[in-house]
Amino acid sequence: MTAYPLVLLHHAGGSATFFEPLVKALPPEIAPIPLDLPGRGRRWREAPVTSIDEAIESLLAAVSSIEGEFAIFGHSLGAYLGLALATRLEETTPPGRCSRLFVSANAAPQAATLPFTGSPLLTSDEEIFEITAKSGGGLTPQVLEHPQLRRRAADLLRADFAISESFLSKQRKTVTEADIVVCCGTEDIFTKEQLASWRCNSTQSTDFHMFPGGHFYLEQNVPALAKVITRQLCPQAA
Image (cartoon, rainbow, N blue to C red; front, side, top):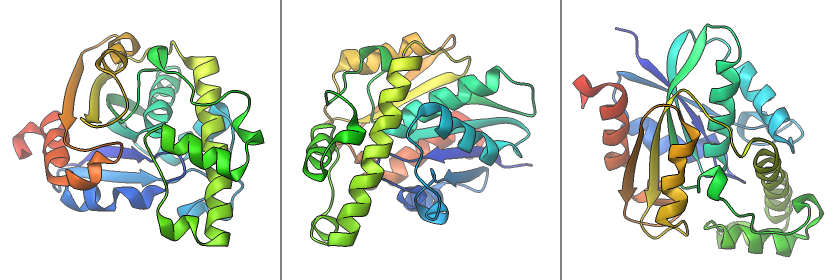
């Protein structure tokens, strides 16, 4: 039996390493594929992209070898990347198609509000860190207190928030044919209405799962989240 591919898309300022605990917790029936945007992880030498179109072109190349159905799990910014990628694939020919989209820790596009005015690319380091905190995230003291890491984090956050702004300005009403599974922490900043509005972004079913914790609820709920994913993709293995 071939394992079910699961593409993992990280949050703003993050990288694929964020998903390492989840990757280890998933059963062998699921094949996780954690991807990095340009500028981090295995792609750290590449210049960060700043628009949704550039981001999706980059991700399309990474999933081009997947044949048949697969799922996408996108956390925070990754939720918007996942929606844009799923719908882009539906506009093209096979081999790959997203059957189920897990949108984690983000408001539905039509109910989202941007935490800044103007272009995030023009913000100062302090401003982008403040925007990140208001969005439910935040950086560790180790990063904030290290000059080189601090500058690098600010650059990546500016680029990633620009991707989010680009998506909301161009694709806020995007609708996918994939089933949507909404996952969120009970202490995150998003309202029930903002989460419920994800129904508007799919022609198929929408399911909801809440977990204890905040924007990074995943870190404290790996086994429970892995079980939800497994039940959705491979119920026989749950």
